[in-house]
Length: 330
Ligand SMILES: NC(=O)C1=CN([C@@H]2O[C@H](COP(=O)(O)OP(=O)(O)OC[C@H]3O[C@@H](n4cnc5c(N)ncnc54)[C@H](OP(=O)(O)O)[C@@H]3O)[C@@H](O)[C@H]2O)C=CC1
Ligand SMILES: CC1=C(/C=C/C(C)=C/C=C/C(C)=C/C=O)C(C)(C)CCC1
Image 1 (cartoon, rainbow, N blue to C red):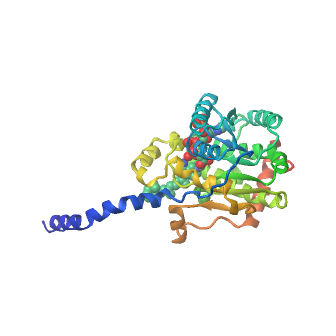
Image 2: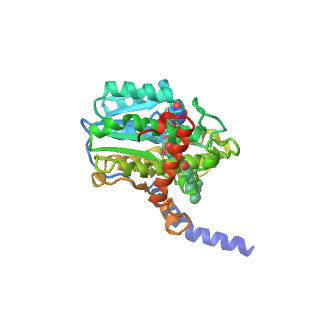
Image 3: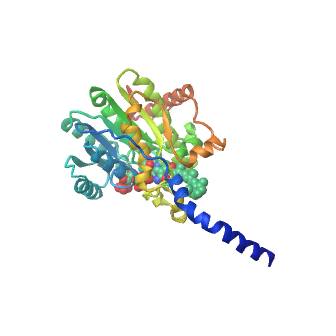
C-alpha cells in the first residue's frame, strides 16, 4: 500500500518533468548535426550502398550541395528508385545509379573500369555499404561475407580508384566502420571463419579491418592531398538488422533511442565536407552515446597506429598468400 502511494506521489511530481524532458532526451540520442554549409558544385562523389539507410541519406545531402553523386548499388532496381527520389527532391539531375556488388570482385572490377572510363574526376569516395549478422556465407570469390563485403570489397574498390582520387586532389575517402570495431579482433588463423563462426564477431572483425585499413592507407597517402578517415555513425534504425529478427525487434523496441538514417548520416557528411577536416587524415570519428560510454571508461580506445600498420601488413600478406590479387601494390 505504502509503495503504491509512494509510486503515485513520485509519478505526480516527476511525471510532468519527464514529459518536458522527452524532446531533450531524443535530441541527445539524435547526435550532432553537420553544420557545414559547404557547396559541392563541380565535385564528384561516389557512395556505396546508397539505395537505403545511411548511404541514401548521405547521397541526398551531398546532392543538395550540388555534387554529381554516383550511387553504387547491388540491386539496380532499388538503386534507381532511390536515385529518382533524390533527383526529384533536390532537382539535381546529376544523381546517377550504377550497379556494384561488393561480394563479387568481377563486379567491382567492371564497375571501376566503367567508372574510370566515364568519370574524369573523383573527389569523395564513401565506402558505406555493409552487412551485419549475416548467416555463414561466402562471397563469389570465397571470402567470408562480412569480411568480403564490408572490408575486402571496399579495399579493392578503393585500390582501383586511387589514382583517380589522387588526380582529383584535394580528395577524401570516408570509411563507414562501427563502434563494433572496438571489440573486433582479426582472427588471422581462421580469417574465413571456417573453424569457428559467430556472426556478431565476424561483423566486428570486418569493422576493425576498416579502421586498420584507414590508418595504414592514411599513412601511405601522406602528401598526396587525399585524406582517409573512418567513422561510427551511431546506432541507426535501418535495414542493417535484416538478418536477425531478434535484433530487428530490439531495434524497434528501443527506436526512441536510435538515430534516424538522416541523423545517422551526419558523421559521414561531416567527414565528407567539413572545411576544418581538409588535411585531417587517419582519424576515427563518432558522436552520440558511445562518447559517454568511452568517457566512462567502458569502451577502450582503438588499437594504436603502429600496431594497426603491422596488422594491416599481415592481412595483406595473408590475402596475397591466398591467391587474391587485391592487396598488391597499395
Ligand atoms: N545502422 C547502424 O546502427 C550502424 C551502421 N553502421 C554501418 O553503416 C553502414 C550503412 O549501414 P545502414 O545504412 O545502417 O544499413 P542498410 O542495411 O540500411 O544499408 C546497407 C547498404 O549496403 C548495401 N549492400 C549490402 N551488401 C552489399 C553488396 N554485396 N554490394 C553492394 N552493396 C551492398 C545494401 O544494399 P541492399 O539494400 O541491396 O541490400 C544497402 O544499400 C554499414 O557499413 C554499417 O555497417 C555502423 C554502425 C551502426
Ligand atoms: C546503451 C543502449 C543502447 C545501445 C546500443 C548500442 C551500443 C548499439 C550498437 C550498435 C552497433 C555497433 C551496430 C552496428 O555496427 C540502445 C539499444 C540504443 C538502447 C538504449 C541503451
